[in-house]
Length: 242
Length: 111
Image 1: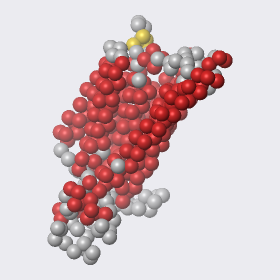
Image 2: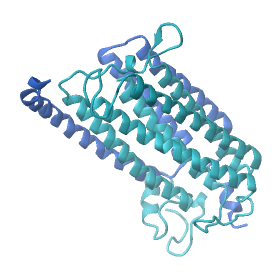
Image 3: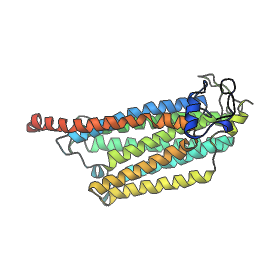
């Protein structure tokens, strides 16, 4: 149905067929399948897909463990409560961490947007703000781990509150997520530095990949960051709220 | 500049929609926290938590990660494969009962 001869010419974006006919045409085009998507972004999506399976395996494993423990599971609402002088407020630290991560997702979106407008300084500043929120998140997680290990005696093999698998599941899932956030913070700072230096205006080649850089990299970075936020949504619901 | 034209096709959208979704994510997170705060229990708790979770995940994927604006070939390649996880969840739910019974028979006396 498209007017172009798909075997010889690359279709301009406005000629691509929409809807389900578009899926068939994209896969049958004898060219790259994912139209309008830069190479780096498609590869980031593939990586995130594999990461989805890793986190899903953790969460499904956690579900299995929770279904099959003979001892009661510790009440996360009480375990993660925190008191500021008065009555302990349930889950308050986790709620604050959730809000921090959502805020950082918002600033990341702004960075991507200003990147496509080639607003160098605003992009770099929003990237750094995002990194700052990410670092704050990791900091609070360190605080949470310390409180659980030192004050409440939670270990990967045992804990005083109930089912002994609680510790191993908690440390593995939140640890893996915290590691993702930490790596994200590192890369946010790297990308911010490149934006600030003007690497993406001059299409300077990266020192590691030797590929030309441009502002699409900010969006690819954003995909990773939103994914980290996305995983937290599931951890928050299944591990903390359940 | 090779990239001049591809950049103008990039995922650029008005800031308004981002700000709206951002605010919505805050509200949904607050709601799911309140579910715990007010000790909603039982099936209502499960339902509310899952609804808020899927809404949040959906908005992040659709708007923040731009899937809403990508071509269907990419969206399906990303969103399709994770559906096989439902099989894993179903299998381990069945297996979970079995493990629970086995633990009940062999491990409970020592605890």
